[in-house]
Length: 209
Image (cartoon, rainbow, N blue to C red):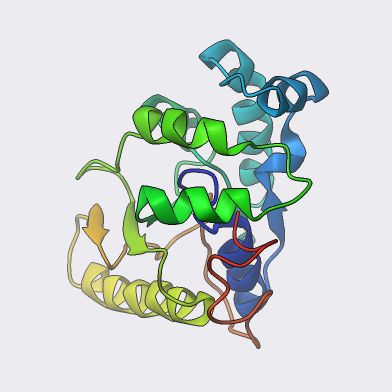
């Protein structure tokens, strides 16, 4: 999860490859009307987002048992609640960082429907993960490989902690709680070779989404 340009698609695809799990890009779930609106520099409202969020929730629910990774902005708590309603074990990985870095990334993505003019709107809409939400916060300035490893390390630590506790932990900055997923940002069976665009894919054209 995170604003446009935070690297959701790049990191999500790399994590899916590493875990040998299917990956879904939430951009592909937008209606033509939503894409046209954003392309014109008009922010989506909640009515625009509801069918999109529900469609992503269906995908998550379908992969809840076997696991899956999806990129989704999920900017508001209420949006994440919709995804949690469909897939209660979902774990959110918030890719967070500097607004100027996001502006540079978005400006360097030729052909993408999201214009730079909507970056400020996304940051204003963003509601960070709350302590009771299942997930973690990672700095998107890290390389793709390092972000994947940070998630996997946090998953291992949390799974070990959860074995000795009857209450699962919530949101941990820089670490996480993804021991049981069918997920909006991560799920966790066997590892495999990583990487979509490779490490260090940050502000270059065509880089993280």
